[in-house]
Amino acid sequence: MFFRNKDELHSLIKDKGLLIKDEGEFELASGDKSKYFFDMKLVSMDPEGSDLIANAILEILKQEDIDYIGGLESGAIPIASVVANKSLKTGKLIPAFFVRKKPKERGTRKSIEGNLAENSRVILVDDVTTKGESVLLAIKKVRELKCDVNKVITIIDRLAGAKENLAKENIELVALFTRNDFDIPDL
Amino acid sequence: MNDITELERLYIELTKDSSIGGSHPLKKISEICLSICLNAGQGKILPSFVLYTIFSDIAFDQDDRMVTTEECKELYNVLNDPIKVVISHLRNSPTDKILLEDVEKLIQNYNKLVKK
Image 1 (cartoon, each protein chain N blue to C red):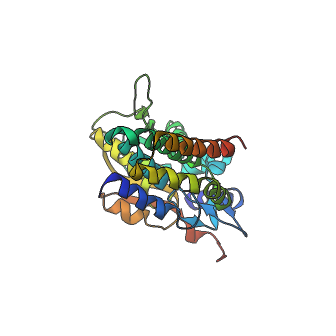
Image 2 (image 1 turned 90 degrees about the vertical axis):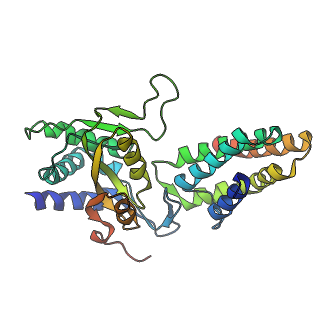
């Protein structure tokens, strides 16, 4: 079941989320340039895609004892939300939260929205990791609440240093897929 | 290393491919500009504030979406010269008239892109 689910997710990402440029390049958030781009919101906000992602993550979470799931806006929001929703049927409820890149300048000025209590055990999710800079920001905010976080689950790891950068913070990066799982031509 | 030297270094690094792009490096540059604005003398407040506003605006715009190098090159073509002039004014302390003219030119060029 797990592998069929992953195969279906792989096909969906390949068909819908993986964009390859024959001419020109994509500019990544890190400042690096690339011939390919994973537009994972096309998958994580797709009815079938969100279901497949949640199933794959819940499978990993079977081995984990955690209280909450979350991540940095906006990539992690649809992922954490659908996992929280589907946890309802697993018997182990996992509420979700997200970390703002910048606290709201008015009102409560919170950096973290949703469900997260201090001193909790947390797993973070991300849609695509390159160097891991975005998820490191989320880790910092979550640790400020004295939460225990030692694992990040990403849908795609572009294999550009995220694993190594997270390891420096004693965080394990678990990728559902890496860029090597896709036929990306050397353009 | 002081903030202005660091800003110059980061800007050269950002534009080494004749483009302005990458939300993470842009955010870092905007934070340096804000630091200059808050800590430097009065003559540096206006140029550093305008630079902060423009860099953070571009960083915010490019964050969380697909960005092509073509659009980053267009940003460079339109903004690089006026940005370099305004950055140089952080060191040169020009007259108010020159400073205002050059800052206005940068803002006008940026507005041209935004309104496109």
